Image 1 (cartoon, helix red, strand yellow):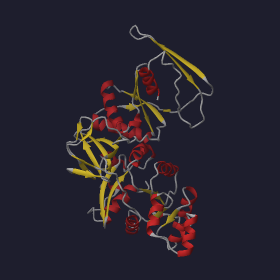
Image 2: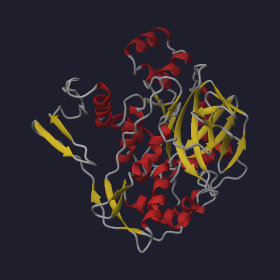
Image 3: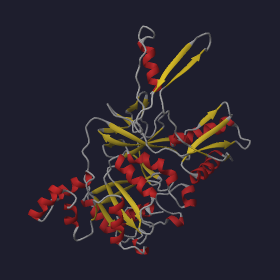
Image 4: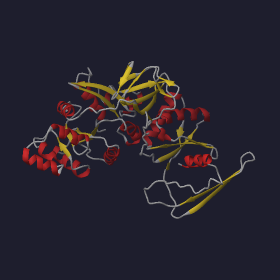
Length: 440
């Protein structure tokens, strides 16, 4: 409720990219297009809008702000050039603000801060800025202040010496400080009343720079969705080269159409180039975080669900429910839909109860499945405290195999490490490789 969608709406309206100014509480914003979003008054899915301002061509990806949908937000982070972190002046810095700040740091994304609702806050801008500096980063600078240049200079010792000699800092240096996450520009205003929007737009235009992209084709998938017609849509950012229709994006998968969405509407393009966000219908086996291109590495999300819930079928067919849930899992892999043969039970992993309510409504609206979820359990991880040997044997269809795993505790946070002590005289290289791959 800090006002991200309202800010997006204000930016689009102020730049003439939107004729009418919608409101979240009226359910008529340009970006919250899903019926559940309109009903709830919150953003559940990420949405795209395109904005033109002076010489700035900007793609806005409006993400959910509620903690229950943070997995959707994290999917988008891997394709951003800059992030705008919206903070409510009335609420200040919440625990979720800190979580988002840590995520932005993890993905090394330059951040602009917009402190919203300053008109109805009892806290002054100076008080909020002090809180931002003490709880997030000392290098958060009020870019609307007369002391901006001097404040920036204090963020770097060598820079401060240069400032003392010249009494200024070159714009190019400031641009680099922002893109390198040394400095974080901060602005204040009220998105609902369009206060501070012009100043923020001017600042964003002045203090951002277009990235340089390689010539060879690269792309990152950040979202999977299904539209009303049942089409499976793959959303991706072009990070190098270009893409055109009829190209084979993945083995034996040619592109039939390239779409660029703006709200709920889209235009088709024969070609898209580096920097653009586009949507491809009909692809299979794509997933959020998938990197396409030579020597590209998939993005592994770090946000982990905290609750596990079992499904109450309520008289519905198991296979029908599983099919519907797997489609929702296709959009949000963190759901981790599982079927327990032993318990005869379907279970999912989620972030919180609001997400659970939305899932129940999605299953009803999309698939006509009136089902509920039973009481949830807290998900937790456990580990060993001493060295132990695990042994298992298997006898499927007149075959026999025996597996020995020596498990040793590592330092907390060090992750998993694998070592193979099996001789090639005992088991050939191919089988050993497959075993290690499956363990990893």
